[in-house]
Image 1: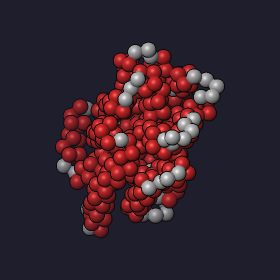
Image 2: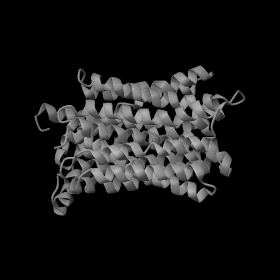
Image 3: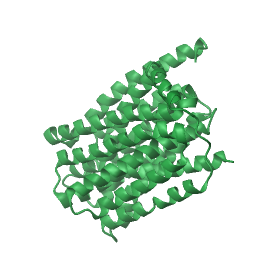
Length: 394
């Protein structure tokens, strides 16, 4: 018999690993740029490979977990991520690095979707709070990658640190192997295919998918380019020790982690729609601060505000989707993560071109434009939910 607390623990371990995945390119970008003489456009191509792999994993996981369950997907994905990190650590050819990034992305895509769907399945009645708590483990994983580099780079070469992080993937794989999981929810292929038209015809799903496409792009752009921004803009002409560069990324991801920890309690006391829209304002203040910052300390404060502001959107919107499609959660989350990652790829690659032509200092302006688009979509989603909840249709 399965136990919900152990299943949620497995989801948290998998999400921690996905946090490592999401920051792997950003944290190692300077090392890779120096090893292979990569310019900003080449870094942009590399950062686009990560969400491409995540996209492939997102396409795969949903129908499989709905049809066959979670265990094998979680175990295999953890090991694939570990293999990809070892490729990055020891590659002597750029094509091997690209393969490693793709593997990391694929395994991460499976972990991201499957852990969110699993957490939603075992958290009926408190999905927003539990998904926010799950997001804390994403933050822990995200902080661990640049944190390990910042703490250990004075003692060990960067490639050895990355290889050590890759070995950690054995832990969530072993835990998922050792516990019991619930049976698959769908017993036939036809049931899965019948769910697709319902998703595509649902206003909540469509608004959520578009909003998370932009949200994923903002998170990806921030995570992958923050270290480059601090090195080339904030610290330009000043001391550029690796720990000072990585601290900008740590501030961003650390604030996101702490905000999601707070959200796991706040969402039990406040309307999620109010929290959702307020978070956009916090992120906008952070971007304006970064745009006008004239010191390293101000830039760090801006990174904190950006991370804290972006924290609420994914868990709250996913909770709406989980509430809407409880029997097809894997397929629904698979489809919505595909939309989110297409947005991530498009925005990340587009910014690579912008940075190459106009400079990486355009980051804050591009982010403000994305936040404006996100506000329109999330405002529509909130209005739809309020209107239909008032009439009892949801």
